Image 1 (tube, rainbow, N blue to C red):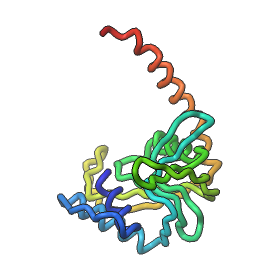
Image 2 (image 1 turned 180 degrees about the vertical axis):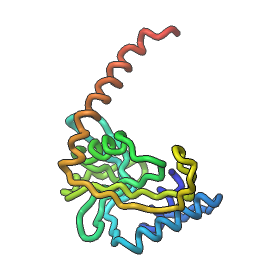
Image 3 (image 1 turned 90 degrees about the horizontal axis):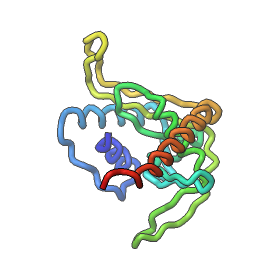
Image 4 (image 1 turned 120 degrees about the vertical axis):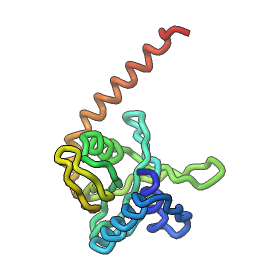
Length: 178
């Protein structure tokens, strides 16, 4: 997954070095990325940015915010076999952040307001595979899954609950055997 993220970033931002292709999976994911770009206009504003929530005390890295087919979109690239609830929770968490932190060098960060994006999207890219339920061959493919803010925000409560569980578990670590 990380390699296709880096490749997509390099394809959208000429200042980012293009990673080498290391295997057939890499090549197939890149081919699907280009097929997705041929079918949809993608104009990035921000790539691989840290998003921060003052209100809830968390941060995360988003893959991109920009225009997809003319609509301001917060997107995430996924290359997993399935779409999981955690993908939607991640999008909702990132979308509910207050600001973006842009690295301007020498450990200096510029604070930017979160842009008023209109929608969320998962950009799914898959290499050739075998369906793990049927054993059938599945050719490489891409899909663009677009969601309204309301659809994704339904997952925000679940994310916040998981965040509270994590904080609670951190509190108990002081009792761990040394």
